Image 1 (tube, each protein chain N blue to C red):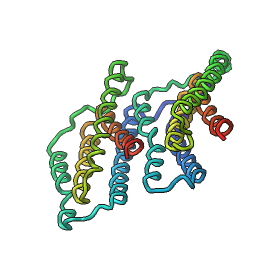
Image 2 (cartoon, rainbow over the protein chains, first blue to last red):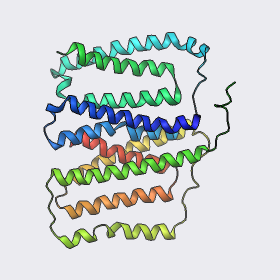
Image 3 (cartoon, each protein chain N blue to C red):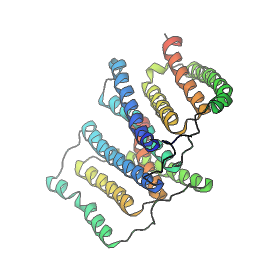
Image 4 (cartoon, helix red, strand yellow):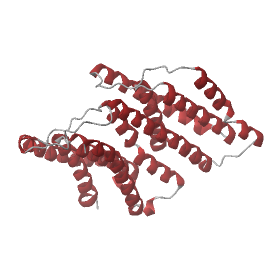
Length: 155
Length: 160
């Protein structure tokens, strides 16, 4: 059971990356103009995968805590706090960067892809292998803030 | 408590590490092929001398096969247990160093104007990867291969 989880983790990680890639390519279709853009987007999607393999190679032992009620109760509050704090910090810093450089995130799709694929990959990996609730909070915060930024704040 | 989770593991950690190492080398091979194709189409490379392109792979593949046949395994193989904090920090630094080095090497590859030289260079890197894959079965090999992969990707994202 455990071994199966380990093996499916990477397949799911890669699968999610591919799905996100296809989705984003359709989403930003009119912004892809040259072959260069395509290469850059593929590279930014692939970016987290070797790193994940390396991390997994180092941390081969399971840190999978028993998913008990006690563990959840103990980590609920820090996880929620981290989620909110990360969300505020990420949205704020993205606003600041846009304000200072006078550029929109939408004009630099590569960075959006990079943040997105890295966070999603580590999210899936953490969820399946390590099940660390605090890390879950941070990663959820980053993803949520990216979504909020793209969806609500920039018009 | 939970009989399914606590069942004995049929595979050991070193086996899993070896599998990850193999995956990583497959990824690097794919990335190198991707680099060659991308450069080929983007820079409109021309074949200057047809005969050279046939012999380009031999330049590095023949020495590789020779070395592989005469050399014994350099490392003992993958470790079963955990790595210490010092080792992790050291090999992460090595990975970062190789990443920076390979960003530079990919930058140099982009400057090559003839297809046969590009092919020879890529084959040389590929041979080095296969050498690491088959002889240095260790965390050192893993960190070097990860560095190569990340270096190529970093170049593609930020400099290309």
